[in-house]
Image: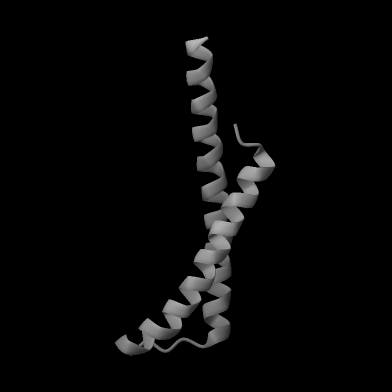
Length: 76
Protein backbone atom coordinates (compact mmCIF):
# COMPACT_ATOMS: atom_id res chain seq x y z
CA UNK A 1 0.00 0.00 0.00
CA UNK A 2 1.01 3.58 -0.60
CA UNK A 3 1.71 5.85 2.36
CA UNK A 4 -0.27 9.07 2.81
CA UNK A 5 2.85 11.11 2.17
CA UNK A 6 3.62 9.29 -1.06
CA UNK A 7 -0.02 9.67 -2.16
CA UNK A 8 0.25 13.42 -1.63
CA UNK A 9 3.56 13.66 -3.49
CA UNK A 10 2.27 11.61 -6.44
CA UNK A 11 -0.88 13.71 -6.65
CA UNK A 12 1.03 17.01 -6.39
CA UNK A 13 3.51 16.03 -9.13
CA UNK A 14 0.66 15.03 -11.43
CA UNK A 15 -1.17 18.28 -10.76
CA UNK A 16 1.95 20.42 -11.30
CA UNK A 17 2.51 18.77 -14.68
CA UNK A 18 -1.16 19.38 -15.51
CA UNK A 19 -0.81 23.01 -14.36
CA UNK A 20 2.10 23.61 -16.74
CA UNK A 21 0.27 21.96 -19.64
CA UNK A 22 -2.82 24.04 -18.84
CA UNK A 23 -0.85 27.28 -18.93
CA UNK A 24 0.66 26.40 -22.30
CA UNK A 25 -2.69 25.35 -23.75
CA UNK A 26 -4.47 28.43 -22.42
CA UNK A 27 -1.85 30.71 -23.92
CA UNK A 28 -2.19 28.90 -27.25
CA UNK A 29 -5.90 28.03 -27.52
CA UNK A 30 -7.68 31.00 -25.92
CA UNK A 31 -6.41 33.56 -28.45
CA UNK A 32 -7.68 31.32 -31.26
CA UNK A 33 -11.20 31.90 -29.87
CA UNK A 34 -10.73 35.61 -29.25
CA UNK A 35 -10.32 35.21 -25.49
CA UNK A 36 -7.53 37.40 -24.18
CA UNK A 37 -6.75 37.02 -20.49
CA UNK A 38 -3.73 38.70 -18.90
CA UNK A 39 -1.05 36.23 -17.80
CA UNK A 40 -1.35 37.37 -14.18
CA UNK A 41 -5.09 36.60 -14.13
CA UNK A 42 -4.52 33.25 -15.83
CA UNK A 43 -1.91 32.33 -13.20
CA UNK A 44 -4.17 33.27 -10.29
CA UNK A 45 -7.11 31.25 -11.61
CA UNK A 46 -4.83 28.31 -12.43
CA UNK A 47 -3.38 28.32 -8.90
CA UNK A 48 -6.86 28.14 -7.36
CA UNK A 49 -7.85 25.23 -9.60
CA UNK A 50 -4.52 23.52 -8.93
CA UNK A 51 -5.02 23.66 -5.15
CA UNK A 52 -8.53 22.22 -5.52
CA UNK A 53 -7.17 19.50 -7.83
CA UNK A 54 -4.51 18.47 -5.31
CA UNK A 55 -7.11 18.17 -2.55
CA UNK A 56 -9.47 16.23 -4.85
CA UNK A 57 -6.76 13.88 -6.12
CA UNK A 58 -5.37 13.19 -2.66
CA UNK A 59 -8.83 12.57 -1.18
CA UNK A 60 -9.84 10.16 -3.94
CA UNK A 61 -6.52 8.33 -3.69
CA UNK A 62 -6.99 7.83 0.06
CA UNK A 63 -10.60 6.66 -0.39
CA UNK A 64 -9.59 4.05 -2.93
CA UNK A 65 -6.63 3.03 -0.79
CA UNK A 66 -9.01 2.50 2.15
CA UNK A 67 -11.30 0.41 -0.08
CA UNK A 68 -8.33 -1.73 -1.13
CA UNK A 69 -7.34 -2.29 2.51
CA UNK A 70 -10.90 -3.38 3.38
CA UNK A 71 -10.94 -5.78 0.43
CA UNK A 72 -7.64 -7.32 1.58
CA UNK A 73 -8.99 -7.66 5.12
CA UNK A 74 -12.04 -9.56 3.82
CA UNK A 75 -9.80 -12.08 2.05
CA UNK A 76 -7.80 -12.92 5.17
